[in-house]
Image 1 (tube, rainbow, N blue to C red):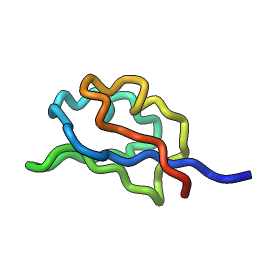
Image 2 (image 1 turned 30 degrees about the vertical axis):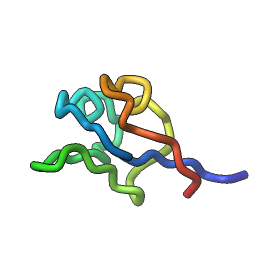
Image 3 (image 1 turned 45 degrees about the vertical axis):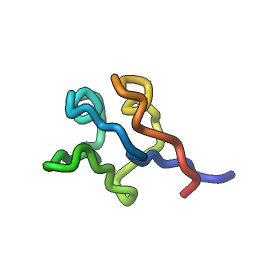
Image 4 (image 1 turned 90 degrees about the vertical axis):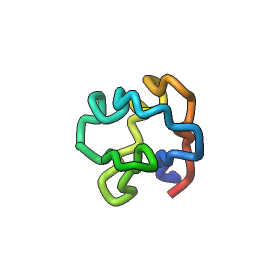
Length: 61
């Protein structure tokens, strides 16, 4: 069974909602926007479901 993780493609609006909902603290913010650590991501999808700008996409890990 493939493991899915999430990544920030483009268009982050810096709302930080993804960072608040991530249960494993896999998301950090910097001047470029959100970044998801694939080693920490558990693939729950909460970040993508709560992304105001739909910048977070599911990728196969």
